[in-house]
Amino acid sequence: MKVFKFGGASVKDATGIKNVSEIIEKYADNDTLIVVSATGKTTNALESVVASFFDEDGKALEKLDHIRELHFNICKGLLGESNHSVYSQLNDIIADVKKKLETYRLDSYNYVYDQTVSAGELLSSVILSAYLNEKGIKNSWLDVRDVLRTDETYREGVVDWKETTERSNKILKPLLKESKVVTQGFIGSTPHYSTTTLGREGSDYTAAIFANILDAENQTIWKDVPGVMNGDPRKFQDAVFIDELTYLEAVEMTYYGASVIHPKTIKPIQNKKIPLWVKSFINPEGKGTKVYEASTALKYPPIRVLKENQTLLTFHTKDFSFVPDDTVGELLKAFAKANLKINIIQTGAISLQAVVTNVPEKIAHVIELVEGHFNIKQDDDLTILTIRHYNDEIIAKHLIGKEVIIGQKRASTYQALFKLKKD
Ligand code: ASP
Image 1 (cartoon, rainbow, N blue to C red):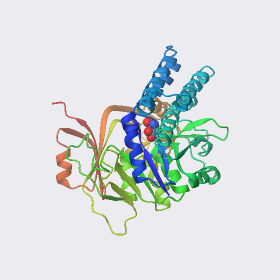
Image 2 (image 1 turned 45 degrees about the horizontal axis):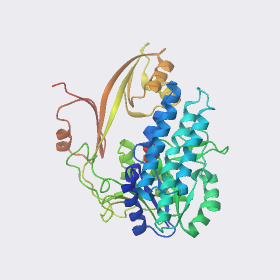
Image 3 (image 1 turned 90 degrees about the vertical axis):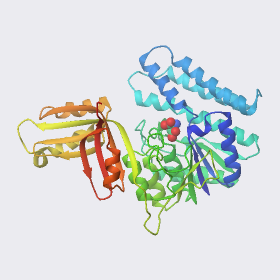
Image 4 (image 1 turned 135 degrees about the vertical axis):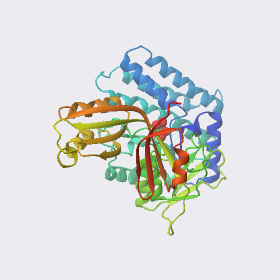
């Protein structure tokens, strides 16, 4: 069996869904599991509903009606003005979100976020499933929350693999014996059936979880690019396509910020040596990139990744105690407590520098925890450039017009923290 994942861009309108259904008709098997994201920018729109709810600006319900209209319009483009049951399914999903919004308290942001934002995947998956059946591509729709169990970490649910495996065996496997299954990426549920999400862009991860559990023959992520490139083509005009990558290279790229695959996707498929394909839904005949356990060393072009919106935090001990000996542990604990990941770290005798993504609440939390012992300086609006498989010429070419604040060279990875020169 295979697992296909379609992202929001592929199902953004009726034409997109028609294209996706052609891909499924042509390339999927009878027992393919199809994991779908919310349409287009729906997740952002639902985030805005949550923001309105907490701002109490009175616009949340109006925004939900707009989201319903968008989905109705997609259905009209696919099924016409029929009295197909999908319209009432869409109505029910939106009505459910509205009803729940009346009961929430204002102190549970992450919980409310997950109950609301998860509607995007429910809407897109009922439409895709209905349209496929209408076209004679037999499938059943599965509410993934009946199968994918997480803990109660709202917005970043931690998967309960044991429970999810048991439920997949009991619920999903029998369904796949009958036909294809269409389900939602990104969402899951707690043992008490509250909805959780796995983190933004998490649908790739959902697909990988099921590929692992179902021992899939392969997983394909259908994207709007020909495959993995050696740099985001929107940021590097000379980006070239890469035919094949090892799991290790893919995990390194995603760790440094390449957004073509969600970082958590690689581990579940690597653990079972399941090949991952990244292919284009615009040109499905194209070769695509294969991520797998290559038996010979693969040769790569320099791979460039930019991570924007970075902040440099510099901590100086107030009493001249040595950072490496006395205070590193304390500082790292503060970052862990604030759930703030360090992207680059550098220590001196009485100072430590940490580069983090600028999430103001988390940075404030770290500062509050350690300001008794350190003088702290904060520099914002920085970018990290990572180059895998670098050479000096490539580094020089990419640093033109940039002021390097930290530069680090390791065996296969060069990293620079920089800001753009003023003139
Ligand atoms: N719809 C979710 C998001 O936009 C999950 C996903 O697309 O993977 O983040």
